[in-house]
Image (cartoon, rainbow, N blue to C red; front, top):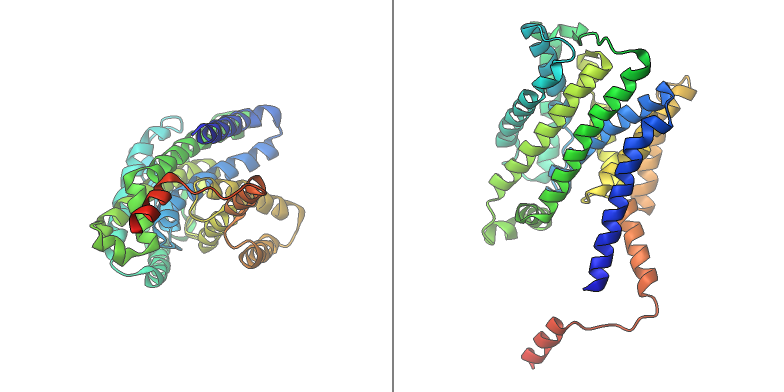
Length: 340
């Protein structure tokens, strides 16, 4: 029991230290280009965490989460243009964007979650291209030109810093929600579905309802960060808001850090997105980052298939338990004694 308390204290201390580092980042590294890296990192931390709430817990790999990201971006743009919101008051629309993302996720989930995992992957890809085509061809979406965000009157020095804290304010609640979901009975039901859906259903889990609720939560968070990305980026076009590489990057982040964990997608986003932006900056080859990401994914699938955090955790556990005698718990002892 004391050891468990000590572990929780260490985890809590590490989380507080990480939060302090994230809050201090734009103050320590005040270069606008560096802070720009931080903004995109926080955007992808939020998106990857939202992806993990659904796919990481349920085992249903989504390759269509850009549907919610792009829908949030376009929803924000359409509402701003239709209702003539000023730039500073645009953030008041974020709760409505979350509702729109949740509604789209509910419809998408009601259609797609009736199938099993491998078929679900194919359906999410198909739905993604449907939404991309709608953004390209509908008049109210701006067609191929897309929608422009309002011009912020912030100074160049404060623009990136302000958006960094806005994106961080979205990332922190997303991580809190991910932790709450994982530790709740709801999260336990999701992991039961991931392990064996038929058995979970036999044990009384309302699998469709649980999967749908998880997707709705994930979709709402993803739509919100899509709207923030739109305001920061200044434009939403079909090929940027609904980008197929965006989905692959999110999946790679989750698998790199540790699929099925809360911290894994966060770590993956903090590694991959700044690295990808740096490669795009130093190289004239626009596809270099995609090539490197593909190689990284191949290496980790072959040599670290469970991701960084689960692998390191197992290694630390083996090191700490090396040389210790095997301990049989009282519960196991009682079961063995009862069977004799």
